[in-house]
Length: 251
Image (cartoon, rainbow, N blue to C red; front, side):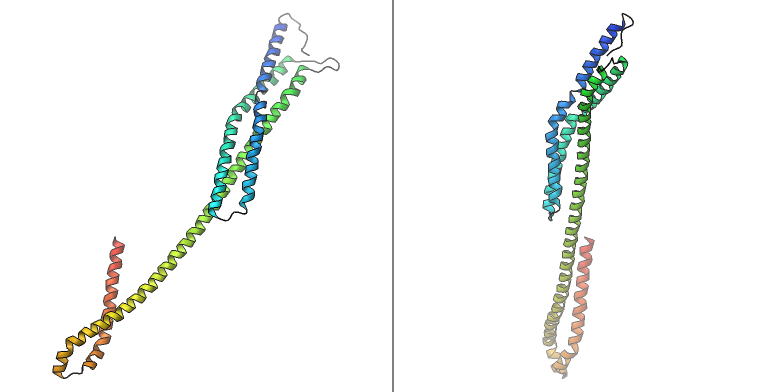
């Protein structure tokens, strides 16, 4: 109970403090209904996080992982909304609780016999409520941290999957380039033979008259000219291809 007043002016001061204590008690308890109402929503987010992380072990495709990432973002948004609704009220409740304790200490109560003090009576009702709010606050902070780690984990998983896909694409491109290179050399060889064949035919017709006039054997002349024509066509095609490749690189 409050100490007995030794002066007439002490009674109004004590009464004022008791009224202040009741006001701060009510203000400190305002966060408790919000904490209770947020409990089911917070539990739903926690269960959603557990389901996503449980299913993640069976996910193999990048699209499925991205779907899980979207689910985590939705859970993070929901938990962020809950945090915005509660943080200000919880902070106010803690502040009012601290003021309430200060006012109770200033009463400097003494108990008579088996009676209970006002500080004990109010503390038994306010402290559990503040402890509930504090537990909910810590629970929300832990959930937000878990969501952040889960999002980072999925981002790493998607990054690894993308690297594997890019490696596969690069290997496919490299194999295609090698196939085109082999095909190009094959076509180049066939083109050399074909052009040489037609060139020898043209030379045969062009040299038929002079060879007949000089008495040279046409077959012998063609045999001599064939390797020369083949080498000339081969290097000519190579020079053309190099010039084309150089022009393409310049552009």
